Amino acid sequence: MENKIKILFLILMLSALSPQIYCQNTSPSTEGKEFWVTFMKNGKRACTAVPNDNDKLQLTIIAREVTTATISNPTTGYTNTVVVPAMTRTLLEVPYSQFYTDEYGTIMNTGMLITAEKNICVYASNQAENSFDATLVLPIRCLGKDYSITTVGTRYYIDDCGDVYAAQFAIVATTDNTRIKITSKLDTNTGQFKDLPFEVTLNRGQVYMIGAEHPPSSSQFPEYTIGLSGSWVEVVQGGQVAVFQGNSATYEKERLNNPNYNLLASHTYDQAIPIKYCGKQASAIMVNNSSTEYYLTAIGFMIIHILPMLMGILTI
Image (spheres, helix red, strand yellow):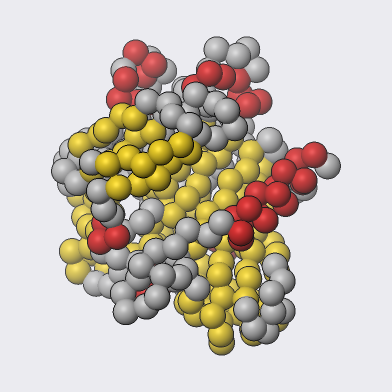
């Protein structure tokens, strides 16, 4: 029950504190009529044949006016249309089989298209036992073709599915024949080498996910504390893409020496902001009185480490 209250509180906070982005030819808003999203691997998801009530992929949709919204998977034909009341949060659970991206280095048909007759705001959340995170989903007009990834690292741990916890990011194509150049700042868990660009080609609604290689001795190497930060995604040919970043599961720094550290691990998940919206200033706050540390990714793969702070403006 306590976990559900925390989740509800987070959703309420997200809807009340929606970040605003200046998108092309619009006033600052994250409302829209078309959205693309996928859900990344959650390291705390149960790997059993028996359904687990703790595992949920959900959308929260908010509208100023009553409207209809359609959730679809263009590559499989899945579709579901719902009525969204005015000024009320509509919570929808969506199927893993359609929208859960859980394989690295493989083209998957797990992209979700959300369309609406009138403007809506969309949030996506990924829940497993003792693990939850959510992201605001950007409308298609706010997407871009160039992204710099920001993630944190994680401690070496093999999850219930036999996979190692990993920093990760997923790319969703919005058009057919989209050629994408990817440069990872760490070796990947599917054999690509760090700082060596490679390309993939995706069709509309297809997804490609990168996971960082994480050897057992990685605690000796400080670069693993920043995960895949500084990795680069560039569209060489085709339309805009949506990019999501985070970790299958990770920990707060002060919890790493706790003997029950795996129980404290949680999924992280947010949508990457296109480079065209990046600037030289960012606001930051300390979360939950923890010794929060910030890693800012600047153009050119420079990593800037900001020590803990209560609140302030960071200037590059």
